[in-house]
Length: 151
Image (cartoon, rainbow, N blue to C red; front, side):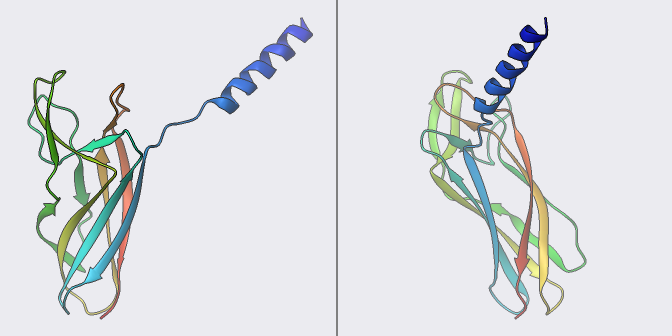
């Protein structure tokens, strides 16, 4: 009985060592002052070949769109909405609609009005869903911090 339990434990450990969590999107964050009172936050997704993430502008009934939530701060205020480059648009048979998405790399941008001359940080979280031609991974939420340098 002890041998069976030892073999079972060894198999479980072996299988869990080979199981990998898929993470086909890597995120990077930066900010650049564009004037004494404004900055732009850059949120970059590097997407593994064969995978894609969705635009912020997906109609109801489609996949989970990429979305951004910024923490309120006394040091800055958002200027407008988060912008994105032109997405690839294709008809999706599963959702029966045109869907915008990004492959390889995409940079989202958010302008902020700075309320102080010194350095600050823009904090928030983003939610996205990543898919390939065979499957989609569950939606993921990621927290981010983008340091804004002093002028």
